Amino acid sequence: MAEMTEETSAPAGSVTGAEAAAEEHTGGHTGGHTGEEKAAAGTAAAKDGAAADGSSPSSSEKPKGRKKKKRSALWYAVSFFAKIGLTVIAVWALLRFVGGVFMCHDNSAFPMIKDGDLVITYRLDPIRQGDVVVYRHGGTVHFGRVCAVAGDKVELGGSIVTVNGYGLYEDTVYPTSAEGAEISFPYTVPDGCVFVLNDYRSDLSDSRSYGGIPLEDTEGKAIFIVRRRGI
Image (cartoon, rainbow, N blue to C red; front, side, top):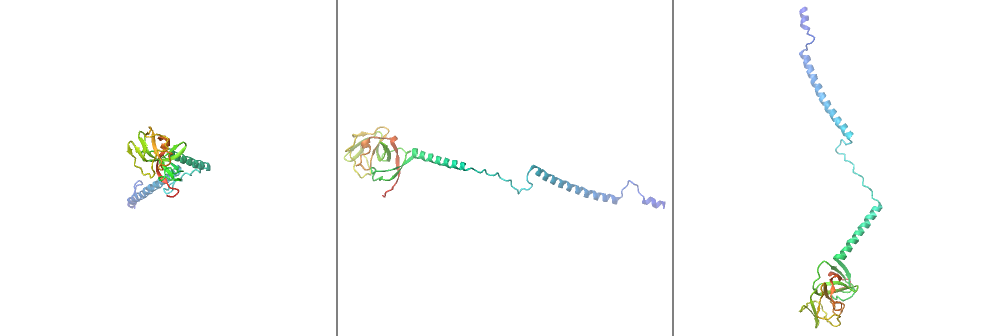
């Protein structure tokens, strides 16, 4: 009996093989659960941090845009009249410095320009011999053809216009006469002037009566004619 007691009893500090294996297994599961718990805790902490910052955890949610400020009726009125003012200034500058629109009220430039026609002029090109121009004299708008420029010598005789000794080729169908002219021929065109004759040569309201037309009195050369009373 004493021997059996000695065999079955074991020291208090010793651990059997089976118990050691069980402890090892339990420790492994405990370590695994601890890692998962730490990961879950980290995710929860990240969500709490995002919530504290005010950011949305969901990337699909978009931030709300700023509301547009409602404009008053006064703002629209000021904007409207400002646009009209700018348009008026632009049109005025265009007609004052670039070109112009003029209506013919006689037949002095017939048949090129007829009574009632609208004539569009262009100011930026230099005026040359043969150009049809619009000019002012005595407060009245006139239409005529440039026959000579500054420094040219003009002679009228036998219904022929001579410039610097050469006959002037023209498309006019009316003979040119110096009868009734208020200037004498030959006539030398002054500096800064042009010599203008009406295409309807029987009308003497041109350089035969006025002499040289100053360039500052010209409104540009005709580039387009709008026929308003038939052809």
